[in-house]
Image 1 (cartoon, rainbow, N blue to C red):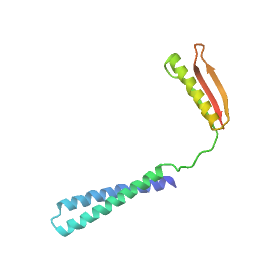
Image 2: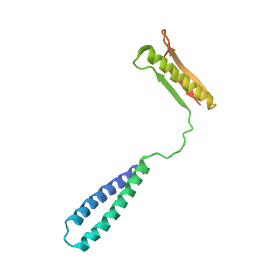
Image 3: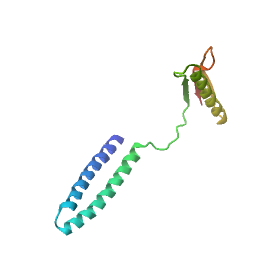
Image 4: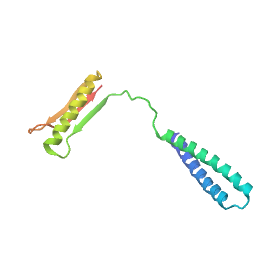
Length: 128
């Protein structure tokens, strides 16, 4: 599956990079001009294959662009900072609530714990 395909590409990339290093050494050190020219052509080929393998690895690591249309639960909690943090948390929760309304999503508040001094300690909501 995914892991074996990724492992294969990574192994091939390592092998190809080693081949490139050896070919570059040969191109620098060999006294035969024909062999050096052949090595230089091989270097170009290796670099192209390395670039293609890197592209394949990135493609395997990045998830497809499929949209997740499942419901979600959002949770906000005030961090360190006292009243200022709780006010910010309240603003964030309100922002999510307004965005859900803008998108015509259902926003159901599950928990809402406000503070005596103002602001919001913790809240969670279900968005559908």
